[in-house]
Image (cartoon, rainbow, N blue to C red; front, side, top):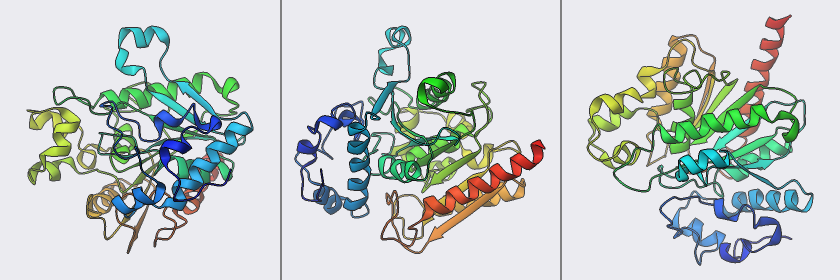
Length: 337
């Protein structure tokens, strides 16, 4: 089926091959579906001009093809016992895109200000591109905000760690041939990705293998700066109302990264009016000081939420990012010899 930008998302979600994944187009815990209900792809672009209709269609059409080929898989990250112990884990899911067995896998975390997981805009199109280049991909629907009385972090980090454990423990079932992996994220999902690299907050805390690379795309990285500017909305979403400075600073990526931090591929646009590209510049500077392999792309245009980046100055960042990752893989291979 060929999709068009004037088709309504509500109708598209009824396509049989999409029924499994349709609840996770823009996953939310607060039940608010205003970004989907009654909207077409073009309507979403009219609301948010960086949400490219053709990129969204590219991702959804890949899901339809996967469904027709019997490869549309949605996995619960937590076991039934774990969900019974904490029902908020029920909708923590992985949406799989197939790849080649010998390639390392990728986990993608879409953004949405920690209020939503906008996979239809960011994770699905980028997953489709990675998958087309042979990489198995899993898009994570992690827990987001539901009330001002709870902390999204470390809850979402627990979900990402559980996702890595789930995939690594089921390699044969999932058709994977190795343990190497990357994590990528956008905006708030980029923050989640970057937090996962912090030793006391992320992969090391949960006893996991270090990711090969982190793809941090227009990511929120400098929480201390947000705190100093008194921009409370995101801080309160992440840590609840009344969060103290010590709690916030514990999750400030820029000041917490150490020499064991994973290599990074950072992408942002100069005209981003939601997350200052200075976040990415400062991150790159800190990584360089610690001799951690990193690459920074700052495009002249693209805004915030460009996802795959088609039609912007950052078009092709996925291919360039994979090139960076493959160089790291080659270097790792030489070190093993």
